[in-house]
Image 1: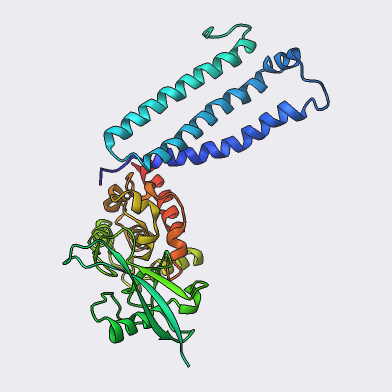
Image 2: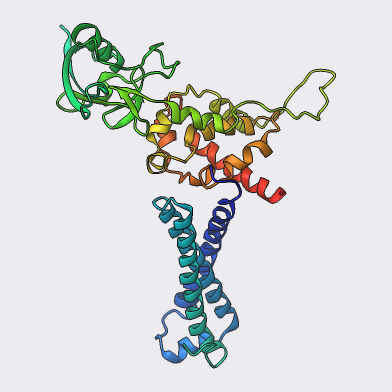
Length: 122
Length: 243
């Protein structure tokens, strides 16, 4: 045994993020596909939607939740194979870097429309 | 006239140093006979050196767990007709996830080590005064049902052999130790959570369980093991919040 107290939070957050995903994915699909049903998808239409704060909030929340949920789940799968504590710490570190990079990139793309300019100009 | 059954048994003798090998036996058997009866016939009539554990022959002692046609089962609770393949053959191996000693006999040490690691006994609160009158515990019927089922464990090690995570990770406590921990954690008389939590709330404790449900499916006593482990997970989250 390797001492207590590691595992409860990833487990709880995986379930909470799954519930959040259920709401956010439905909201996202609704906004994207059903609110302007029948209209042609144009660049201007997409820009107009992405300038809407509420729609953007859903997309930011979806980005954060989906990245956490996916990488936390992937970490669980990897940990079934990677047993050593050092290798596990390294794996967690790499996944944090991948997650943060994805968030920055996704946030940057969304922010370009909301603010009129990208945060980072990546 | 009796039908016959073909048993393909994985043999292993540590004294010869030979790798495990398959040996075929044919014995007469009635369709309703348990696999254990056929094994006993082999040992009594054909090869007295065949090693396997068995005792009560009634699904109570939990001694004769073995892998029958790729799935861990109690040989005394498995009828020949249930497991015979189209050619009338039954393949028998020792339990998975435990080192083999001889033929179908495994070394149970890892299993018992994990069982004893979870403090599998009732730990009453020492500071609570004994009730003057009758001691009466109250539980919701569903909770009592699950606790009662968890108490039915016969230590047959079938859940331990059926769990693929135990096969991957020898450090994992495994389903039997966890359902036993649940049995005491769910008991209203028990106050042992702070003692057990460091073992249960551990990457190799409840959190390694991936809810594959093999343990629940394989358990010959029908214990909903996975459900008990999930309840333990929730209890460990509450324990974490209390800290």
